[in-house]
Length: 232
Length: 251
Image (cartoon, rainbow over all chains, first blue to last red):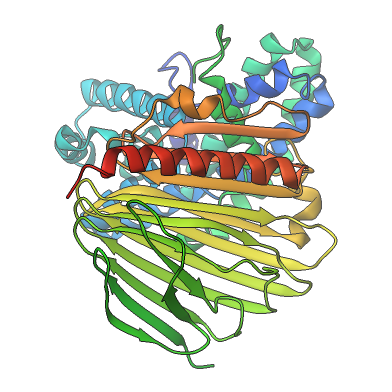
């Protein structure tokens, strides 16, 4: 890796790092229902959940959107960029998940614009004045990653990796799990992150799919809990 | 294989511009209802040719579409493209549909709905995720209000994903899945009215979400087909009752 590439990687890592802005969306509200019903009760269960979350849910939704946004930004086709944001918004069936994703998107957009000027993000900010509902984290992240010249593979890989670690961090407190078990789950899931990233590079918009019905139902049920551990 | 087409424009009590190619056809049903004009839609399962169905529901019409009760096992190849335009104040109620994939089947559905302003749309579907047969089921539900996409739901299951789908969060070991979409800017009920109709039985899961103020989506995963059908029917009857209460006063 050249010095220039290494610096870029650090920049990308920092974008996700909690010291920069803790805004990465987790699917913790879906996971919480599984933990409460004791279906996720061990590191093996958590590993199974992480596998489906990364390898089925994120790769066929968020990762494809990142890839397609890179493609359309490269073509400078703004109309398609807005269309993709529209589809991503409609694709998230559960209202609570939409809201947290938008909240994270708004925080990321505001923060990025306060630290540097960005043509795409400024244009996007104008776009979402009337279409606030489209301001999802993954859209802002993809625009920033593209504009900063991060390569697509790394942008997807980091997105998946930090989604994984965020989920595991939530799970450790809720199950609860020993820190060493959480580390084992994360390290074992790194293979899944790699495989998912490789897979995402071969997919396109028409490959988007939803088979995470259990996760969706859990997130729907979460709204009606009297006391909640997680809100995102 | 040549496409089979069906095209119809529904007014309050009439069917206009009706064109159909066998086996697809629509006929008025004998069912009497205070507000709905009910039709039977048949032929979906009788040809492997791709089906192209285009409906327009004219302003202020209340239309209910039902498929005749018969074993709904799919053919080996099934490709259905449904497009509906629902005008202001109109309502299209697509009654419960059951999809039972046959062995070595490929099912491809694309449902695209355009609702205008306060138009309403209801769709109910039960899918059998039978792991003992070889199948591939793909369905894309797109619901639009002009340029705004209300919902985009590309469901995909296949028996080859079997082991992968058993992971937590996917379809797990549940052999049945059901969905009900009720698109309306002002659904005539409270979310608790629906919640109380969803049981928390063991090996049966159900959830409901608001779709950004544009309607609701209810989803089930179940091991008990009779309980699942009972709940879906109960929710649909409740919708029918509420819609009737509200629309019976409209001229």
